Length: 309
Image 1 (spheres, rainbow, N blue to C red):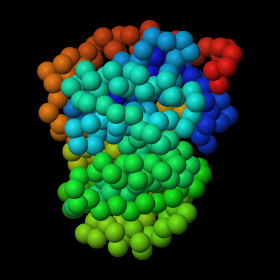
Image 2: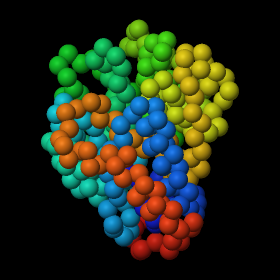
Image 3: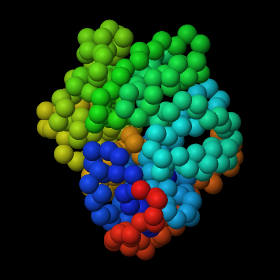
């Protein structure tokens, strides 16, 4: 995870939440980020923190680390961003991955990372493209998957700009599930998803809940960390499967920035990380981060440097 800096604001305005360029509150954004990180840790997750580089204009999209790339085997494949204001994120991402002892390579096709890779049990993967990531990215990612991997490619339609806005696979106490919004898919049906995901319960998600980022929630340790505002019907279905729903207020990071819990996390799994990773644990720097955020302004700068939009 990577926390927002003191001048966090909307730069690219390139999704349906951010396109109106709402003014932002960096202090509140920091509190939202820390609440999510704390909820992950409380559920048993291990959080490593990639600090934002001190740059102006800031890399405001870096907090959405699901787009940073993904770990494939022993190599972290670094994204090739669609949005021009996010291209420079690859340097700090590469540097941090190497600090963790991971090899890195850069994607050649335009591809926005883990947000386009939905992992199912049984060495199966749903690879998405169509809005931000290009079709060529599917073959590039597929070539790096484990031997014997089975894949299903799906094309997305706007405003579902990443796969993690409409597809979410996770374990529950009652077995694995896949949340899926059929309205987001151009060339696949729910029946096709169910066939590919045999043994995984597919729970249909309507467009309203998908736009509320139900599929961008994060399941950790039997808890479902979800943005506020999802329907009672869907939350009841998740509770029926043994999940404890944790309601998160993300008015800045999601409501304005357009990224929910899953967008804010890059899941590494359990790779053998170098000893340097210990220095980046959230619990090792929680107090310092909280103190720093407490000094953030309540309103971000309203004047952007020319050429940074």
